[in-house]
Length: 260
Image 1 (tube, helix red, strand yellow):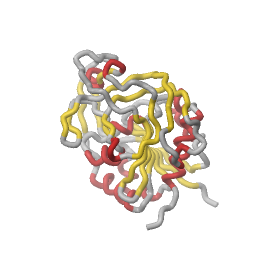
Image 2 (cartoon, helix red, strand yellow):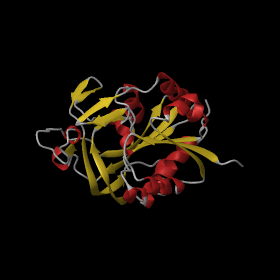
Image 3 (cartoon, helix red, strand yellow):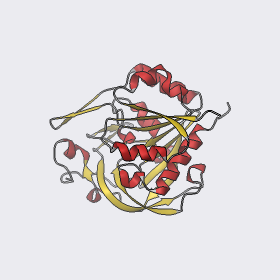
Image 4 (cartoon, one colour):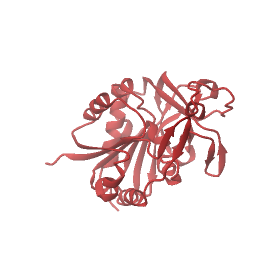
């Protein structure tokens, strides 16, 4: 029997390649194709997304950071159309970590993922919002809040060391899976806009309101299942057995054939 195929998209955000490759190898017996932005757009548009059994987005496409500024770009219409065809065919996808920030110029992306991380103040679903927050190397407890195939075999709670986001989460549009035992308030995070301007680890003059502690969820992209997990900043998380189990389960679940 032929191996199931997994298409992985990365790029637009730095990560440690060898530990990430080891993480991918631990997710199951997949034949992996790994595409990196900006070169990923053309193969996806030409059918790579539609051909894969499972798809993992670990990308943050559509940005150029330079000299204290950030510029954004929209995906090609052919790229968008290819993803729409995939989801229309009932085949889903898994999104990890900084994928929440991808494609600022494509509002449909945040609807697919179920939230939005902003590098600059902006508008989300008709509401003015501040830029989002980040904090690296947070030690917290992840707590399951649902019974779901994505959580099969995962401990009810488990320790994590990872980056967390204070970002927009569309809780009304998603099915919660995992919450973080952490206080999602401005004092515990740093401004993304300040970081872009060269002021790393700064939350001065940044009155961001409290946010959601939801860090993993599912939603529907039409008839296709989507799973988003905030896990994934670096090697500590890649090696976490509970995180590996969640992502492996999510890939299996989203790759299952679904009848019309």
